[in-house]
Amino acid sequence: MELILQSGIPILGSVLVVTIGFLLNQSRERKAEWRKIKLELYRNYIFSLSGTLVGESTSKSQREYAIACNNLLLVAPSKVIDLMESHREKSHKDRTITLEDHDALLTKLLLAIRKDIGLSNKDNELFEVKLWSSGVLTSK
Image 1 (cartoon, rainbow, N blue to C red):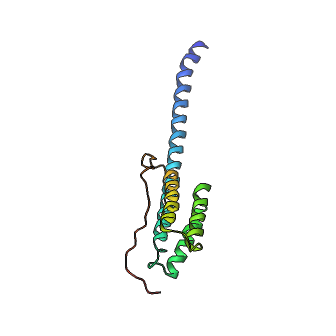
Image 2 (image 1 turned 45 degrees about the vertical axis):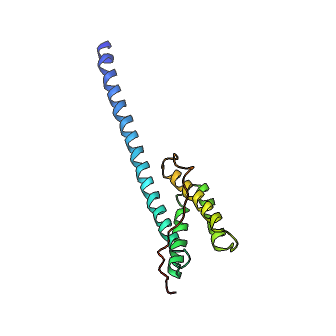
Image 3 (image 1 turned 120 degrees about the vertical axis):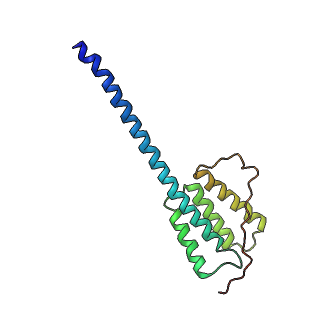
């Protein structure tokens, strides 16, 4: 009996180590896949946001922006969604918002997005967002 216990303990230990390793690897793979999905949806959001700039906006780009916002409702944390909604409200409905206030709100939104996808917070004090426009006027 003692011999069975002596040989069984290392076998059980090995099985336990392999099982834990497998489970941890599965968890890492799921997190990496989830991050990849979020990154793609955030990329689509920023792409579509660029299409809503003054001089760049078309009805097609407005539809793309709405779709990108709606898709983010599936994966973004509530802080990001709240900031997205606040940015949309201020940008599209409040015609008294200054460019500085707009950029400050957009900076908060982008910092929340960067945090959600796991980017470093080291540059938060220096991080300031200003969207770039192509400068090419679109025909409606």
